[in-house]
Image (cartoon, rainbow, N blue to C red; front, side):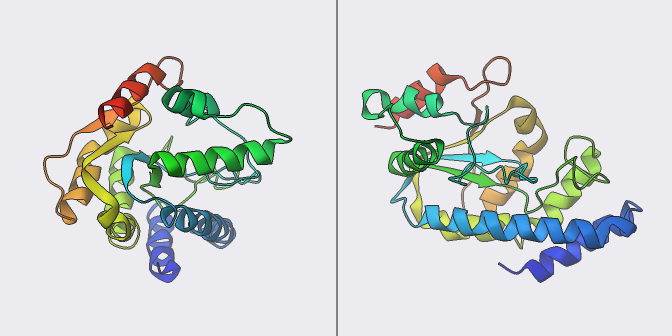
Length: 225
């Protein structure tokens, strides 16, 4: 994946939004986040035989703490907690760990064994505390769609092509939050269509108060066995 192409798109966005003065500093952070998350994501796809659940996410929050689901040194968030996975695997999950990193590594390995892959749809880890001029929460729907369309060929389409042979007719496509589904459903379907996946249904795993609907997730997973 070529950061140069993605960087060019990013620069055009900053010019359009009249925040060109922030570009040099923001690009350093965004490239660092991109390189870090790509390294860990690519490690995971080599450990999954077939994908049972392809869970689309917006982009890592990242920031100074390097918040990313596949970062073994970063803890859990409401996006996908240890107990969310336990709702699927039950007694197959151990409970005692010597430290947080050991627990996170175990969680990541179990995600892979379960055939669950998290896939970001955007290459830019915008963070309100760092890239203050732009972030996904406050940008217009028009800009949101434009960034998706401009980066699709160089990011999401590349990733989908990489994993297409691991997607089966039983693979479940999902997003974590209802709000994300309403914003991205048509965009994600267009991307899936490019690799020959048509008429795909995308589920939301959102529960109450930002939590995962564990019962729904467990029932969906059980139906795939």
